[in-house]
Image (cartoon, rainbow, N blue to C red):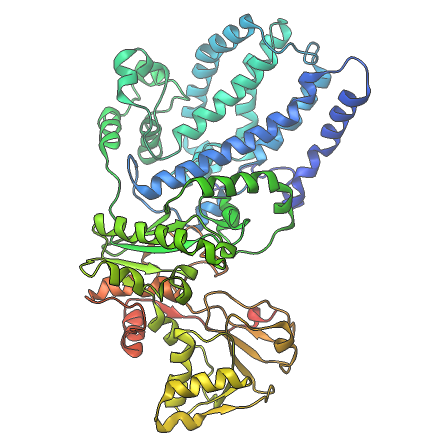
Length: 622
C-alpha cells in the first residue's frame, strides 16, 4: 500500500477475494460457445482465454526460476532479504491479468476489426515494434518520472517501490489507477494495428508476451543477459535493459526510469553511473557457499506448489490441502516427471542468521517413495551425493529433515558418517533438540502422559527423560511397553513406565502409527503433542493439537518468506534449528545414528541464540 493511498488504489473486485476469477466466466463461456456452436468460427477471440492462462503460467515460471537462482546466489544482484510482508503485498499479481482480460473481451466486441484476426501479418508486427520503440517508450519514460513526483509517488507509485529487492512479479504490483494508465500506453500499438487492419494473433499475443518477458526479466534480481550480446551488437545496449539496470531504479529511485529501452535515460541524462559496473559485477558473482544446509524432501505430489519454488502465496502459509490443486493434475504430473528426471538435490531457500549463510536443499522424492524398499538405494544415493556436495562446498553442518534420517533408510544418518569417516561436514539428525522441544511442550504440573505411536530414537529418549523427571508414562500396547522397558535396563526410574489403557489421561505423546480409533478414545480437552516429523490427522474438534517439534525463529533470522511444510510463519522444525545451533556453537561432532547430544545443553543454546518454544493456544484446537 502507498504511504498515502489515493483514489482508485484498490481493484474493483477486491471484495470478491479468492473468487475474483469468476468475473471472467461470462466472457470465457460466451467466446467458447460461439466458437463451438456458431458458424464463422472466430479463433482469435477463442484464443483470448488461453492467452490469459499462458500469461499466468509464464509469470509463475519466472517466479520459480528467480527464486531458484537467487537462492543459489550466482549472478544475484541484491542481497537484502525478502520477508512475508512483501509476499503478501505481491500475492495479487494476477489482478492485472484479469483487468487486461476484461478489456480484451470488451475491445473484441466493441472495436471494429478486433475479431476474426489472421494468425500472422508481418506488417502488423513491424508497426507494433515501431510504435513501441517510439511513442510507448517515450510516453512511459515521462509518465514514470511524473509518478516519482512527491504527490503521485506518495499516493500511488510508492506501493511499487515498497519492494527494494524485487521478484519478477513485482513488475505488476501497482495501484489500480496506475494500471489504467499503463494499459492505455500499451494499447496504442494494439489499437493502431487493429484500426489499420494489420493486426494478427501473432502481433497481439507476441507483444503482450514481450511485455511480460521484459517486465519479469527486469525484476528477477539475477543477471542473465550475457556480455557477448552487447559486444556483438553494441546498439542493443540502448534498446534492451538488463535486470541490474532496472534494479538500480529500485535502490536509487531517481535514475534508470526507462521502460525497457535505456536510450531515453541516456538522452535525458538519468542513467545511473554505476549501471555498467553493477552489470559486470553481477555477471561475475559466483554461487554462494552456505555454512549450514538443511536437507529435506517433497512430501506429497501437491507439495511442489507449497514449496518456495512453487506458488508463493501457498508457500507463505502453512501447508494445507487445497481442492483446486486437483484441477492442476497435468502440471502436477509434469512436475513429478521433472523431479524423476532431475536426479539430485536442489536449492529452494536461503537465509542469513548473524554471520551464518543458511540454505535448504530438497531431495526430489516423495513420502510414498521413502516407504518403498526398492527406492531405498536411489534415495540413499541422492542423500549421499548431497552430503558430499556439502563437504566439497565447505558446509559446516548438514541437518537431515523429515524421512532423510529414517532408521530404515540410513540409521538416522549414521550410514554416511561410517562410509566417510574423515567427513568435515557435521551430519546432524537434530534428535536432541526434538526431544527437548517435546519435553518443554508438556504443560507444567503434568504428572502422567500417554504414549502412542511408532517407537523411534526420539520416542525412546522422550520416554526415558520423562521417567527420570518423575512423570508417569502410560503405554497402552504391550509390545511397545516391553521394548521401552528393555531400553531402561536396570534403572530405578523404570517404575514410572506403566502398561495401561487409561485413555482418560489429558496429555498424549503421539507419533507415526497413531490411528483414528486411538484418537476416538481420548477424552474431551486432550492435548496431543507429536514427537514425530509428521503431524497426526486432526480428527477431534474437542481436543488440542500441538505442532510437531519446532521453535519460533528470532527476528534476526533474515529472508524468511515461506513456511516450512505445515508449520506457522517464522517457525522452524527442531531438526532444522538443531543444525543452525550446532554451527553457531561450533560443536565438532556428528549427531546421528544412536548418538545424541546433551538435551539440556542443546535446548539452552537454542534459547540463548533467540529461538523460542512454541506455546499451545486456543487456535490449536481443531
